[in-house]
Length: 263
Image (cartoon, rainbow, N blue to C red; front, side):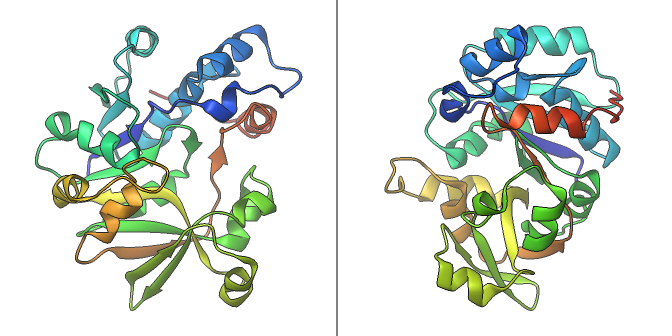
């Protein structure tokens, strides 16, 4: 059973830095301006607190946060947080070269063991993480599109642009990024959507080394996944809270108002 999670928390937050999101507190505006989405104040906590609590609820006992070289704010927050339900370590991504590079940056800290990978600006349901923990090979959590629309704070038109998962007999065949209208219609409302929630064996590190930058100049985790021999697809009916933009803060805060953080 997997006990380690890698949380990609370095992101530049370019969309978060843009104007918008009326009604933010001074602390929230400062977090948005810094681009540190995982450190966004949500009620009495930060987004990362909810993420770590959900990971611990799912059985994760060690979380490796991938951060930038300038990570003093993360270090100070974690020291004040002093979590006891799971151990939190930092891995430094020297340059923002993409999600595959972020995963590769965690190699020395993670060691030769399997791990769950999630985004730092998303909050995933513990039931989904628990399913990934049981994976015996590399696996991708596939969110049913209709359920994702119903249970997330993400508008349907945004979800329509997310990558679709094509699978057969429980194994990944293809990830279709930015599907067009015809592909979406053919896939139907129960099509599986990728929200960048994976389980990986250590073979992912070698796969990350083999890929070339994408057309946008980044090393993408999707390209590394394509290098793997077999990837299981785990269908899941549930939602994800997304904090990519300032306009997302209010909805995330409202949905988390009654959620208890236990670390």
